[in-house]
Every structure is written in structure tokens, then in C-alpha cells.
Amino acid sequence: MMPQSTVADRPLAMPGWDVTSEAPLGLWETLRRSGDFLARHLQELVPGQTAAFWLGLITMIVVGFDTKRLVTRRIVFLTLQFIPALLVFDLDRQGSQFHDVVAWSRFGHLTLLLMLIQVVTVLWALSIRIRKQVDHEPVIGRPLLRLVALLFLLLSCGAAIESQGADSSIYTNWGAQRLRERGLLPYGDPWLRQGTATAYGPAIYLMLIPAQVLTYPEALNPPVDLPESYAFSRGLPVRATICVLLIIGFFGLVALGRKLGDRRTGWALAALVFSSPFVLGIGGPGSTVAGAGNISDTAPFVFLVLAFLWLERRPALAGLSLAQATAAGFFPLLIVPPMLIWLKGRGNGVLRFLTAYAVLGAAYLAWVLMFTETPQDGSKSALTVFMDCTFGVQTRANDPANQLVGYGDSPFGFWGSHPDWRDAFLGRPGAAETVWWGHLTLLVLVAFATLRARGRSFAGLLMVCGAVVLGFQLLRTHASGTHLMWAIPLLIGPLLARRASVAVTDAATTTA
Image (cartoon, rainbow, N blue to C red; front, top):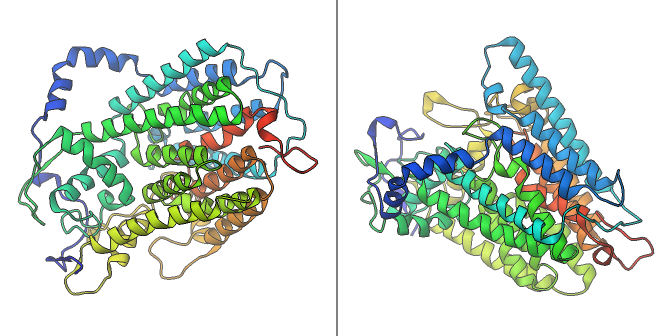
């Protein structure tokens, strides 16, 4: 029987800070806090947004530039990555100056330029066809390349550990804690009240449970719907989980690069992705708007990499990985059609991929339906509660009167700084009428990418799927390059592919 909330009419929002208290220090947190002196010096080594930008730019020049050609498409594209980074620089502060007319106008122009660049990138990624592939030759050799890549892995983990207040990481930690204590998913939790702690995929909450159990072997609070006071777990569980995910994703990228070329290509791809400002963190001092400190960016990124790594030889594992990515970030569902068309063109693996994806996806859906709390009066089903908590938070208007949190009318980002365009293309947040232009554009993008995937090389499949992912994040409320981490490996990888990996059966060689 579906669990029901004992509080049917209570307003839904995040709990007030006046009833919260800090959790006691767990074992691992105590060990971390005991090394305060070392931690302070470690923090000095973690790059801020300025250092992240310059480190990424230098790495792009050393690793991404081709010694055989001064100007190539890969150089142009890698450079395009740093134009958005320059525009996103300090975006958190710029986007908060709502009462300064001049600053707000400048912010609107900045987000418009950022949107145009990303739209051009999507169109370019869908249309590019390199007929004469030139093997990529980084300036530095493989041993030094490996050292550089591993250094950026350490810096990314350090940035995740020292990240101050990445919203998704804070709120998912709270939602996972409630899941552990009550045995129910946070959707419909009468205490979290459809707030931001309930806005993420079920896979993210599930991934945080092991680290929470290791950090705090005993649950911090009793399984009460509406506690008088509440002890929140500290940030170590989510930071540890992000570091594990980053390590998995890093070596997944190395293997994916080897699939596209050779060992040197693998280390080059890992170095370029992990040196990106959109991985190291950019957007504000300490509290970044993009980067590895956000588990909602890191988790889908890692499982997307694994899905493409296994797609050709182990389609069942690829299906499971893509289903895990979908249960974490939802958007990977959009790249299922291009992947199926591509697999069908190879003559095998379609059934195994689709079966694995469907089985794990159905398991997550059943979990959501069976372990989501519903109102006692039966006014909403579990699926409706789930949609209200996830997609509803992202699209509805903020409603302080009813204590409902919503990002739909957030002024931060392109759509928020251009409300007339938002209302015409995506619809006015909270309005009764539905505007389908945004949904229609996304469907057209997926359909076109699916057609482009037919008969393409593996590198070409990566590129068209990267275009879909990039296009999806442009339709989100905060369309300001904040989720470029999802698309970067899919768009950079094909540009490093060697001739042997991009050959296709038709007369013309098609690559990304």
C-alpha cells in the first residue's frame, strides 16, 4: 500500500532554520577536522575561478592544439569552450545585482551572448562532417600527459571537497538523510515540503546513502514526519561520493579516449575535460554555479561516459549506465533514440541495450511509485507528487505565500533576464496556459540528431548526442552554461579521434 502523509494540508517548503541543529561529528569528519592546519593549506592549493580559467586555457593550448595544423576545427571548438567560461566568470555575483539598472542590463547582454554561442555550438555539432581527418598530436608526450591529467583529477577532487554551498549537493544530502531515516523517498516528505531537497533524481539520493552510513553509522534523527528539532548531516558524505564519482569518471574518460584513438588520446581527453573551468568550478568565489562540487552535474556526467564506453562491445552495461544517468538527471532519456539508431546500424546489441535500460528504469520507477508519500486525502498520486517535486520545482513560480519553492521565475540566467522571451517560448511560470515551443524545439532537436546518428562513426554519435545534451540545458530555467559539464566530454572526445576510429562504411569518412 502506498504510504500516505499524515499532514495533508500543511504548506510545503523547505524547513525553517529555527528548528535545525548541527549533527555531531562522525568518525571521518572528526579526522578531517583534526587536520585543520593541513586543510587550510590544502584549500590554498585548490584553484579558484580565476586559476581554473587560466589552468584550463593553458592545458587547452598544450594538449588541445595540433602540431600538424595551426588552425583546425578542434582548436576552434576548444576555444569556444573558454568563451562561455569567460562569460560565466563571476556570474553568481553579476546575476544578483537586480537593483542596479546598469549592471542588470549588462547581465542581460552577457546571458544573451552566452545563449547565442551555445546555440551556434549545437548547430555546429549537428552539422560538422570532417572528410579528411588529421591525427591529433599533443605537444607533450604520454608520461607528462598522464601526470597532467592526474594532477587535474586531484584538483577536481579538491575543488569538490572545498566547494562552499553548491546547492544541489547540500539539498541532495538532506534528501538522502531523510530517505535513510524514514525509508521513504523525499518526494512528498511533509517536512521537506516539496522544496529543493526533493528536486533531484532518485539515483542521486541512493548514491549518497553508503557515504552517510560510513560517516554516521547510527541515524542522526528518529523517523518522525515533523520533528521538533533536526540534526542535519555535515557535507562529508556528499563530498566523498563526488570524489568517488570523479575518479570513476576520470578513468572512464581515459578508456573512452583510447577507444577513440590510443593511450595518448585517452590521457589527452581526460586532461582536457578535467582541466575545464566547468569541471574545476567557475561562476563565483567559493560558491560556483558550475563544476564538480555539484553532484547533480557530476553523477550524470560519469554515467554518460560509462554508457558510451560500453555501448559497442557491452550494450547491456551501456543500457544500465544510461538508465542510472537518467535516474540521476532525467535528460539522458533524450539520447536513447540516437543510440538505438546507431546500434541498429551496427546490426547487434539493440535488444540487450534496450532491455537493460528498461529493466533498471522500471525498477527506479517502481521504487518511486511505492516509496513516495502521498497526501492522506488522496488528492495526488505518487507520480503526481514526484512530478511536482522534481519538474515542478524547476518550472513553477516561487510562491512564498504558500511556502512553495520554484525556480521558474528565477531572474538568474538567460530566461530570467529576458522574461518576455521566456513567457513566449517556455510559458509564464505558474500560468494556466501551456506554451509548447520549447518542448517542440527539443523534440525536433532529438529527431534531427537521431537521423544524423544513422550510419555515423562512434565519434559522430558522441557529437550528435552532445548537441542534444547541450540543447536540453539551454531550455532549463538557468540556461547560463551551468550544466556544460554534461556535454563537454561528448563534444571534445570526437575532436581527438584518430583516423582508424572514425572510418565508416560509406565512401566519405564521417566524424564529429
